[in-house]
Amino acid sequence: MTELTRDALGWSPFYMSQLELEELETLIPARIATVHRDRVMGFSEIGTLELTLDPGITTAAVGVGDWVLCAPDQHRLVRVLDRQTELTRGTEYHTGEKQLIAANLDTLFITSSCNNDFNPARLERYLALAHDAMITPVIVLTKADQCDDPDAYVDQARLLGRDLEVIAMDAKNDDVPALLAPWCGKGQTVALAGSSGVGKTTLANALTGGNAATQDIREDDARGRHTTTGRSLHAMRTGGWLIDTPGMRGLGVAEVAFGIDATFPEISEIAETCKFRDCDHETEPGCAVQAAIEKGEIDPDRLKRFKKLKRENEQATQTIAQARDRSRKLGKMYRSAIKKKGR
Ligand SMILES: Nc1nc2c(ncn2[C@@H]2O[C@H](COP(=O)(O)OP(=O)(O)OP(=O)(O)O)[C@@H](O)[C@H]2O)c(=O)[nH]1
Ligand SMILES: [Mg+2]
Image 1 (spheres, helix red, strand yellow):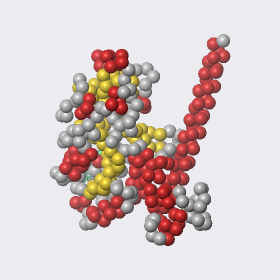
Image 2 (tube, rainbow, N blue to C red):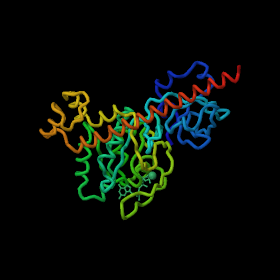
Image 3 (tube, rainbow, N blue to C red):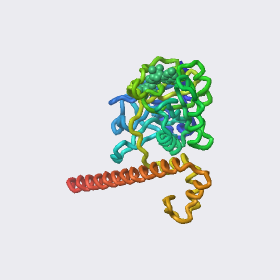
Image 4 (cartoon, rainbow, N blue to C red):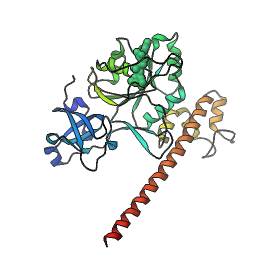
């Protein structure tokens, strides 16, 4: 197993600068590996720790990959440190909440297979979430060995961004660690995301030397069976840290306008030069985006998907704002009722 020094675990001045002097003397940092209902498990310089949470901290506030401070002798988690990056998704039915997928990632391996699972719109969703969180996306295409022309998938995926890294492979082959080495070095943190059955755990096993459960996909529709059920952090043989995640069904976008623009730079940049600020890029006069489509500079399918994602993001962002407003008002009412009672 990788040595558990802070540096090896991915510690940096960003986290160090958050420590108070007395915390330095009494508490130690740990990196969260798994989150359970009422306790969490983390890696620290003194080994693996199982921690209970101090009052006021719920497991919902702790994510895999988080840096926390803990009182090691009492096995207590005292404080969650601010995150350098935070990968979240909107919930499927826009309940006004966002869900944390993983904390403090450097890279997201967006995984898809070279088969029916390959879906540009879904890949763009992941790209928008990664770009918004300032996490480097890499598109990893698995099952190249089962496909006649993997390069056709690579070419399609490359069209989904500028300078986008796309790598096709057989996840069961020995060359996986070498192909993914640029993102898996000492102290680097990566998460695997993608639909069930694409081979995330197969890749994880190749990178960590582990043997977590994998399962055949269904013959009829190439879908997986949701074999992995929780997120967890693992040491990679190359010195980095890997988070495996269960296949995600709904992948909502919310509050990621920046990420969507960054995913479709060829559209968002040209859209700035449209005659009208609120141009819908349909039939408006002076629409620079339509002009670029005419010239073959923008793919009309990309524009459709860009608009759809933007619309969904705007609605979900609004729902979240309303839910936050409601809970603020409720909190205010509650506090003033308590005050009155105390008089
Ligand atoms: N031939 C081949 N089979 C692969 C490849 N990658 C994964 N598989 C197989 O695909 C099946 C699903 O792989 P998993 O690693 O369990 O998929 P997963 O993404 O972790 O799935 P969930 O945990 O359900 O989200 C297994 O039978 C793997 O052996 C690949 O590149 N080539
Ligand atoms: Mg899995």
